[in-house]
Structures are given as structure tokens and as C-alpha cells.
Amino acid sequence: MKSNLSHELPIFSVPRLSSNKIVAHLEATLRAATLRLNETCNSFTNGAFCDDRPLYHLLMGNMFMLLLVLCVFGNCVNLIIYHSDQMRQFLAIKMLSAKVLLNTLLMVCFLPQALRICQIWSANSGAEAIYWQTWPYLMYLINVLGFCSMWLTVLITFEYYLHVAFPTHSKLWCNEANVSKCSFIILLVALSLHLIVPLNRIIDKLRCPGNRIFYQVTMRPGN
Image 1 (cartoon, one colour):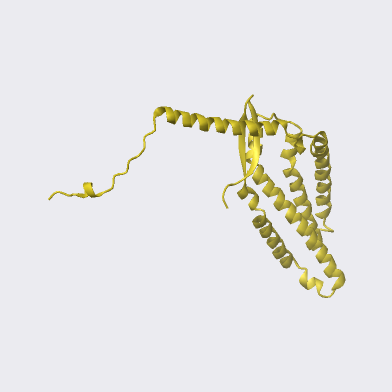
Image 2 (image 1 turned 135 degrees about the horizontal axis):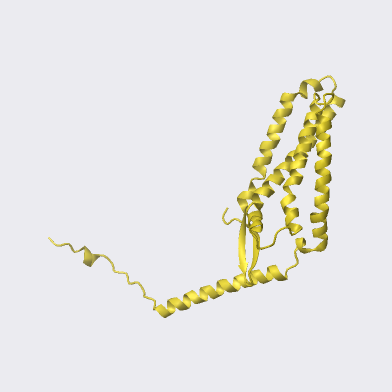
């Protein structure tokens, strides 16, 4: 018995585009993309950015390098003093040592930015590409270190307040176990709160006419 399904199913006709129309459509799409790229490149070339100003180069470049040297030297001296036999046994000194270490790491994390501002490498080099590829994660680390350092300062101040306001109960509250719990909570909140930076920021590389390369920080598409 022969089947009649071939006569019962609807037949859809697909419009055929000529090769000339397809080529014209591709050319129009390419021209639109090229026009958008040129507009973006011109905005980068002719725009006035903060990191192009001489004052920004002075403060965040050469002055920062001097500040970094002084910071690392001063913090190393503090750590040596804090770890002396007369001071290392105090809980407040341990928290101060942790804060000094966080501040030192924070300043070191700004070093790639300062080197870039001082133009240690060229704008089209591989070091520039590596810098921008790691920029979201570097900003994440900087935010986490700054957050932990700030709230560790609050924790130290709160401990001093308890020793003054409640001298009899402060030794029960301000022990090493409670400080470790508070420090762990601060670290956990910092890691979670600033995770939006590497998740939501992406780096677009734009290759403009004249062998010019620009990097654009944009938001990741979607929710």
C-alpha cells in the first residue's frame, strides 16, 4: 500500500537569494562594522583621558614609585620591631603585623599600573596585552586587600575600645580564637563582595588603523 503523506504534508518554499544580493549584504555588514570600529578608534584617539594627563603621570607614576619604596621599607622595619621578643606576644601586635603585611601587598599590586604609566613597555608590546588580560583579577586582589586592611583597622580599634570600656571582660572577649574568627569572616566577605569585578568586567582588544591597539574595559553581556 502506497503512502500519501507526501501529498498531505505542506510544502514550504524557501526564497533564494542571488549571489549578487548575498555579496551586497555582506559588504554592507562589513562597512557598518568598519564604521563602528573607526568611530570607536577616533574616540580613543581624540578623547581626553585621565591617565593621559601629565599630573596623573607624575602622581601615579614617578611619585608612586617613590611612595612604594618608602612604604615597603617602613613596613619591613615595623615587622622587624613587631616580631621582637618583647612585643610578639601581644594580640594587638599580631593584628598590626597582619595589617602591615596587607598594606605592603596592596602597594605591590599597584606596581604593574605604575610601571605602565611610566611607559616601561610600549603600548603594542606583549607586556601590555598581559597587563590588560590580568587587569580584572588584579583589581579584584587590590579590592580584597584594601577591604581586609580597612576592616582589620576597625577590629583593632574595637579591641582597644573594649580594653578601655570593659577592662574586666575584655580579656575574655579579645582572645586569639575570636580574632581569628573575625578575620576569617572579613576575608570571606571581601572575597565574595568583590567577586563582581572579574565576573562582570571583560577586556576588548581593538586593533585600529595605523597599527594602533587599544584596550577597552566593558561590562560582560547578560545578567
